Image (tube, rainbow, N blue to C red):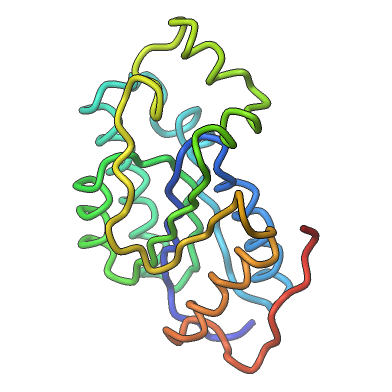
Length: 187
């Protein structure tokens, strides 16, 4: 096992933008290089850590604080933490970034139209029909990051290109070994 420095890679973006997909490939790549990695996916966290919270702004902020707290604990114990969470509000993201310190914000950016096309759960359709209230991107705000560390434009680039951007930033910042070649994941 190699000595590593902890960091939180926070993937934010609309539902369907590709956060979980990128996270899955990034996790596999980092593990293949013998890095210790933990994943905090928004859906998993809602079921296990934030059950009972609504989708009000206050509860969304509380959900992000809870994810940030766990990410902070793991990061300070030299784990690379991958967070995939919509996290729609800039202030909440800034709060967890300040708490964690070793924080890389990744904006997983895809147009709303593309996100709706990718929607395997039918959430956008239900939101547009009025069945889901406060759905981010439809009747609730998503505040795009002003200066993300990495932007992955998933409606214009492959998964491999997106993951490579993140790996390059991690290498640039000294969190992973620079000498390791970039990946070749499926597009």
